[in-house]
Image (cartoon, rainbow, N blue to C red; front, top):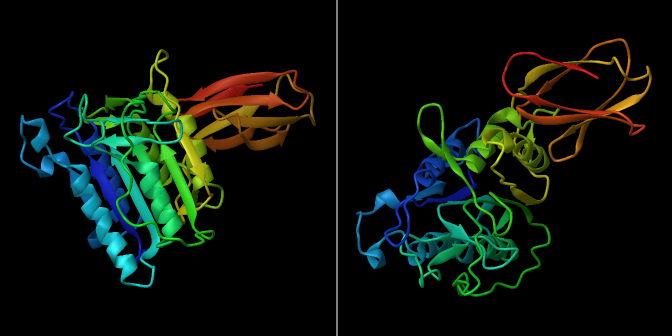
Length: 334
């Protein structure tokens, strides 16, 4: 258990000014559950703050809707105060998770709209990157992890809310970061019901599948890089052919989960059209090479998670796409 890890998790589904959502509170609860799980984030319960719109009395008066920017600022402010009172040190890792309606005031930022936001009131928001960057510069933690499951629609007239705390001048050079956004700039994020009827954001569903072990690398760890590869490969399987949502990740290859059990569907690849000895790359949907093998009479057996993959011969002449969609053995002839 990481006794000095902290988390702020926010899920807003009720918006009196604009349309309600069904997924963000489910997503926030599920992510919070993963944070507390010993085999997950291992964050002590008292260190992981969960804020939901259903925590507050429902109202039809938009200005009275909660949570507000001020409410979230007070929650982050407790961590700021802790750092000020402890010589600039709070803990090892800070998780920030934000889900609900959102927009992107610029190509780099993503902002979660508060419950009292709406047309003419888009200034009621929390810009995730700006808040994460404040803690990066302050160096109150050695790692900062930010995940945002919200749309990134362009509202250029919205004034960007800034963290209300004084700027702290530190080097911050040793602080590692991992930022994950549900979609690219100016695009929508999506929510869908699962087989039990619970609505979830597809980004968070893919994220938690990876964090729960499906994104583990050959060493059995879930890292920033392995999580990125998994989410980019798995998320498209949750959408239909007409839908598009491409998550964005950036930052360091930090170890998020140690000793996660590798999972995957057995895939058996036979070489029928490739000359023996010729090298073949296996690429995921992010076009990254995840394995290489020389063609031979032997069957290439490998465990793969759900998603799209491509076999590519090194001579560039032959390639083949295939999809892993379930748990049954997949047979590929190449």
